[in-house]
Structure formats: C-alpha cells, structure tokens
Length: 363
Ligand SMILES: [Fe+2]
Image 1 (cartoon, helix red, strand yellow):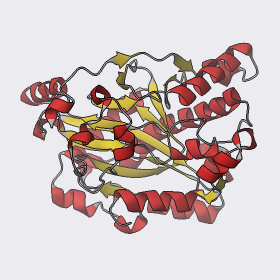
Image 2 (tube, helix red, strand yellow; image 1 turned 90 degrees about the vertical axis):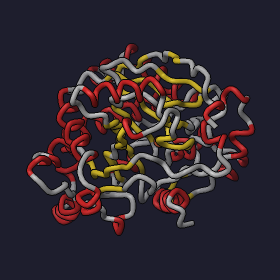
Image 3 (cartoon, helix red, strand yellow; image 1 turned 135 degrees about the vertical axis):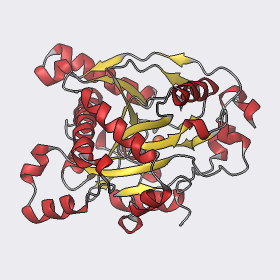
C-alpha cells in the first residue's frame, strides 16, 4: 500500500491572509484586499494561510507541553478522561475511536499520483491519533451569556488528574481562544470578500453554536513510515483554524484535485473550510479533503528527539467552530434550484449528529 504515496508530495505556498488591516480599519482598502484574498483561498483551495497580529504564540508552548504529557500518560489515566456521553464535546477520545469514511467516488475522480493513502485500503483503518476536546468561547461571548448557561458550560470542562496537569484548563483556554479569535475574524473576512453579510458565517457560531479546541495526539516514535494518522476526510464544522503542528504530515487536496502540502510560516495558522461553509454557500466554498500520514522524515526526527530525551508526541492544535441551532441552506447569492436540491435547509446540529454517527460507526 505504501507505494501508492511513496512519491513526492509537492509543497505549495498560498498568499498569507493578514488579519491586521481588517482589525485596524475594516473599511479600508487594505482590509478589503485581505478579505478578497481570504475568500479566493476558501473558494479555490478550501484552505488559507492566516496571520493574526493578536496571536500570542507563547501560549502554544505550555499547551503543547501539557498535551505531550497527556499523550505519554498511562492508558488508565487517559481512560479516566473519557466522557463519551457528551458526544463529541468534552474529554478524551482514544486512538481508533474515529475512522474516516470511505470515499470511492471522490478517490476515483483523482489522478493516480494524487490519490490518498486511504486509496490503498478496501476500507480505511481506524485513525492512530487520539483527540482531546475542550469547549471554547471568547470572553465577550461569556459576558453575554446567561449565568445559568455559563455555569453549565464551565461545569462541563474537565482536566486530567495529577499535579503535572496543573493549569490545564487555563492553558487550553489561552491557546484555544487565540485560535478561535483568528477563526471568527477570518470567517467575517471570508464573508465580506464573498459579498455577503459580515456575520453570515459567524452569527450561528456565536449565538448558540459551539467551538472546540480539539487537539490530536499521536506518538510518532510508535508509527511505521507512511502509517495513517488520520484517514482521507473533510471536516464537518464551519471553519477550522489550525495551529502549526510540531511534526509535519498534513496533506491536503485542492479543489482541482491536486495532492499537496501547504507551507505554513511559523507565525501563521492554517484555516480549513468545513462542510457547513460549503453548505451555506451552495458549494461556492469547497470543503477540503485532507489526511495525515507518518512521513518518513518526521519519524526519523521523532526518533532523534526521543533519543535526546525529548517528547516524540505529535500534537495538532485544531479549533473547530460550528453552528448548532441555526438552519443552514445556501445564501440567496448562491441559491438556485440546483443548490437547494443539493443543500436543502437543515438544522446545523442535526447535520453534525449525522456526521458523528458516520465516523464513529454508529450510523
Ligand atoms: Fe480534519
């Protein structure tokens, strides 16, 4: 199976979307140029590279260290952090809990050199990564929440037990809010770049939607070369803002079917469009497929780090934002008989529940 991807995956550069001009003066021509860039990246690639001058990258270090510590903890401690009854909202999902769906019709449409690793399997194997879930919101949303709702949400947060995890919730909040702020601002810019209302994508996220910091965790030193960390899939949220992982391995597909890696400068994030963004634009935005594999070079680096006493655990930091109580359908700008047939009105939470059942094998 390895020979299917034992070829070079080209690395491409995308224009960096700078949130700075929009944050300073959203009506300026510099801001509008960035909005246009954000929209084009989402429409053409389903991904964009984002620089947020507000981001304090120092918050990433503590977050990364805590996640690596959790990744190295005993299976018993990790199991204690499962909260399966909350759906995909809180705590730990062990490796193997998620399995990418099979996409023969998509894979068949790709040329052979652009096929995913998953193409070598009759059915994709379960993912090797585990995932933590930490619910997020921004301080300004918190101020607007009713006391009862806030207490309920805050009461649901959990942290692993033990001194080594001290400050867990605060570290998750700090890094998660960094990604969430970027995600919301970038989504506003995408909307303006597309020529629709600024809050078209974000109103449903802020008012009753959910945002999660959902980092993925996998020990690279235990993987074989080309082993699948996360199978070929798309995300089912509205938009996801990703902090740069501490090991490479992310491969994405562009709308025109090219399999590439995207260069993300150290001070930038990668934003990916999810199924909700595609739904709300009648397909004008494309939900990008992607997969994560253990690249031989990254395995080598992990083993070197481990022999030097460091942690070989890969942590991907992902902030997913989605609606919940809003009804999604194509905006009038993209509403036609065809788009409505393909994307009929649906409650955001119903669509998410359906997707979760599919990836956890409960459908
Ligand atoms: Fe994903």
